[in-house]
Amino acid sequence: MNNEQLIEKLKTIVKPYVQNEEAFKGIDLKTSFLKDLEINSAHLVDVILDIEDEFDIRIENEEMEKMLDVEASLNIIKSKIE
Amino acid sequence: MNNIGTDLLYFKSKSTIENRKLRYVEKVLTSDEVKFLNDKNLNRNFWKLWSLKESAYKYYLQVSDEAPRLNPTAYSLINWNASKAKMKLPNQQVIVLEIFEDEAVVFTCTVSEGFQHLSQATFPTNFPIQKITKKQWDKLVIQIKKSAYNIPYLKLKNKNYCLSKTHDAGKEVISVPDFMLLT
Image 1 (cartoon, rainbow over the protein chains, first blue to last red):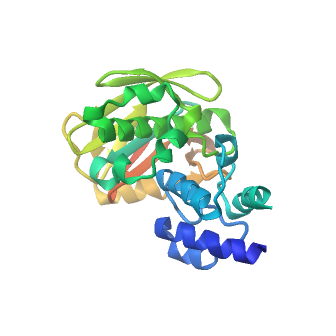
Image 2 (cartoon, rainbow over the protein chains, first blue to last red):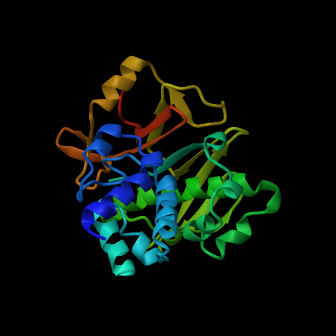
Image 3 (spheres, chains in turn red, brown):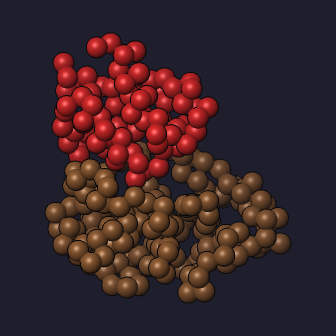
């Protein structure tokens, strides 16, 4: 699965929690979940759980703490599914 | 520089723990913290604990200058009662937080002597939140800046001051040093 495909899957996961639609339309590797998409931190935990389910992976707490933007999240997902 | 972390949370704005995935709790609470949830007030206690963690997190980002991380289990509750809680931060520092609540809403803050809590909304009379006018609010908001880590602060006469912002259910509270005069 390439970056574009992963980003599309990630977009589907985060969409229900996004509060800044403009930032969501322009989502890229540097997009921050908290600062740009304005996902609140309680929902960010939901995002992590949805990622676990979608990719059938387990994300440890030490990995979760880094998943604050698209790039960091993709790196962790890729390390689990490759 | 004095530091402060606050959090406002309306219980009805949060979905119940039962409706979330079971793994949600283990991503957020330590195994020791689970004992603070009792069946009778499971959701209320969970979200109150979440609110305390949010306040502690905001405080810690100010004192540590570390980059933000999603690590709620690194902020652990030691004990609590109806009005106060003691929590351990990621650097092992122990802090005390205050809890103000009624049936609908909880406001938590790190011990905040030297700060005033301001809002345009009306809160229960036991909450330490002062209602201000839209004009005062707008004047305050315009002075708020954000650090590279997206942490809000005030810059007054070339000196930086910590503040805390929190919002939920369309209501917002800003906590600023109490020397700030609102005219």
